[in-house]
Length: 277
Ligand SMILES: [Zn+2]
Image (cartoon, rainbow, N blue to C red; front, side, top):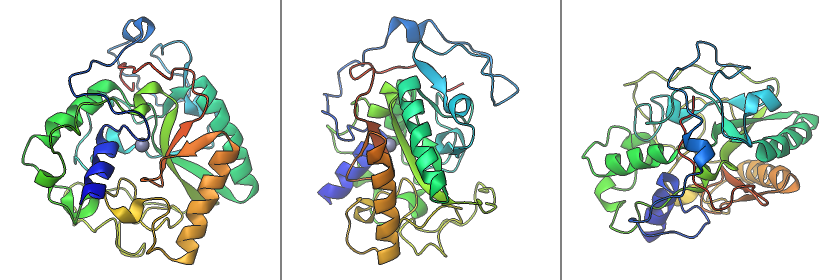
């Protein structure tokens, strides 16, 4: 149970391999971040952002438009079941250094017949705060897919909530691999019957991705990168992603096969809070 708790706590706020800080700590936000916001979403998603990003940040699509994006927290298909606060547009924002490193990983992946697909990139602190509020309410609408084997009330003991996530530093992202050419993927329909993220690939939500043994944001030990209980092909797929990302200078968080941080990130101590817009 403790592993499950730590796993979900990581996904929510996610110390995710970093030092957890007390819940009362205030994240540091750069002045450039807080002054660079625009409340007006653009009608076009890419490639030219209408909002000014903090210095050092880019839209991933402006660096590599071939990388697939399925930014789940900007949709209802996530463990909360609705758009998360701070995600005004479904786009991947990263530090330029991380985006350029990811571009090189994408080139390696493409040479092998695959594409990267990102699920989450830069995450504003206000989104983390939204997760914290959600943790305090009784809603469990998405339990059947994302935390099927753990009761929500057991997932959030005092002390696990309130720390900043590495995602807010702009050089951490969640991603997977897709075989090219990418297959068509149907849209998630809010309210559709949910299937456990630990179910076989043919039964869980029909993602177009390589079978990694679980779905994304699956709060279960089976999602630990080195977990037993997955088959040879799933193991090979996880190893392929780990290898490609390691070659690109990213390190995996061992409790989530999808979570990676750039080793030499440009803002190792700064937790930004500008919206994904
Ligand atoms: Zn992550």
